[in-house]
Amino acid sequence: MILEEGQVLFREGAPSEKLYVIRDGELQGTNSRNSEVNTYGPGVLIGELSLLKKEPCSETVTATEDSELIEITPDNLDETLEQEPTWFKSIITFLTGRLQIAGDNKRKSDKIKALPSLLYILDSLSVRTKVNEEVDVSLAEVMDGVENLFNLSKDNIEDLLKILEDLEILKIQGPQIHVKNANVVHLLYESIRYRARYKKMPPQILSMTEQMVLNAVIKTVQQSKEPLKNGTFTVSTDSLLKVGKRAMFGATLTTRTMLPLLERKLLNASISIGDGSSLPEITTIPAFHGDFDTILDLMELNRIYPLLDKKLV
Amino acid sequence: MTSRQQLIPPTHQSVKAGFVVYSPGSEYRSIVILEEGELVAREVTPPHSVVFTMRPGDLVGVAALLEREPFRYELSASKDSKITLVTEECMESELKRLPLWLLALIRSLSAKTHQLKRATVKTRVQNSLKSIAEYLSHKPKDVEFNLAELIREYCFLTKISTAAAQEDLKSLLRRHLIKLSQKDGRIFCKIVDPELLHIFTDYLRAQERGVEYAPYKLNIVQKKILVFLSASEGIKPKTGPEWITFIHEKFTDADVSQWINLLKKEWFVKAEPNNPDCDHFVVNKIQVHYYLKALRYETNIRGVL
Image (spheres, helix red, strand yellow):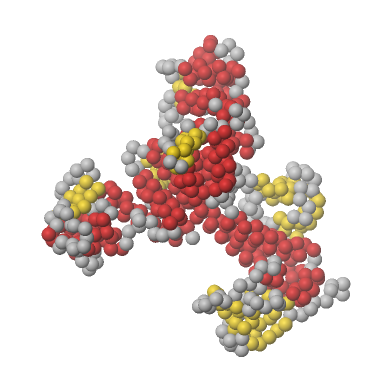
């Protein structure tokens, strides 16, 4: 077939099941996902997966000069393959499947690798405009920032934002992104960075026991009528033990189970518990105190963190 | 089809459970197609874990045969099986029979898979200078950052090599967009002005798109208006026609088309952005300040110091 300069071979997203081999001339492919322009010259094939898997066109291809193309239809393919041994068809199927898997893996890998960049931009824009934990940032600024920093296409950034929306970290509201808790975005970014750098679990990620203890603490604070003092709560050990019995699914609250949280200053005992070599009975400690928001943010991070990998892969 | 070359047929074999169909040390390459039974691919090193199991219809060795990629696992029959072996000679004879477009299709499928696999391990960033400028534009000004830490964080984000990041930092240093200092044998980096780095990324974006960066295509009249607006204080909101008259009084060369131009540049915004009926405009100080800064530091941004 002959294409004149400026003539469109096919448009992005349009259904197609043909393969084109360029015999002469030049064509250019563009898409809405990024600003890349692909140039195709003689000998190049366009539309392999359209022919083999009936995939819609991935870009708009236009002739930039008068061009001559060979058109291969599914009938041409079937006629040719009928003359080949059956094992040959298996090889074509294998190569097609492998290309599709490689494409899927690339898309997944791009998203996984781009997540820190998105969190970095969100974190920094949130800090700039933050008045409390909730903050609105410009969607366009986030998009431009991630594109500049990581060169991720807009549709991939949108997919990533959707994942964060599903995890209830943020909500896209027209031209704005409403970040529900800027502290959690920061904690998430730092946790991922820590894991990448030290190849081990970030310190912000708590064990199941630690999470159960903090859950009991949160419930005790919520049930208590004591107001927070500058964000700091105080819970009596008696109340904590009562709530703990119900909230910890059979696990017992002891000074030993509290120790990791005390060592990390997430909780503070109202009396000295020594150096940890011989711990006092929990009932001898009158109360515990700590920063309520820090604990809530940490628990939110621990809710999100294990879900993130599942969402991305 | 008498013109077609003759195909060297593949080999069909029946193998007992435990039979090693392929081991990585073998000189012979072939595609193994499982017709009946079950094959397993195992690691060659202890504990010889099973990597995958093949069911009837599955095949392995395509990459090894067509692309000379090593097949790293030992393939053995876990049940009595029937297999078809497509040897190199057999495949060559088949490829010679194919029409050219089909041969090109096979090569293209293979090449595109390789391209995607290579791209997966490489950085996506193409303009690393724009990328690092964006990264640094989010850091606060006048804070001394440990340079090694900055580079580490940037490389973690972008998967760019340290050497490439260092080269780009030199370029930013030459433009006086960052400052370096040394203390106790360590190098520290200070961001001169994050907004300037932001302007720089916008400038690089425009260059990439092959368009002139908007602040650098202002004419003389527009530049004069810009300076006037940046210095103006307390001008009350005006309607479009009022602004046209106001600007025309100050700059006789400015007309209606100039006003449309200035609106496009977002130097003016609606006085009440959420009110669709509002017809009054005020000076958009943020945008005016942005244009002015871009012009003031043009030599830094263009890198012609």
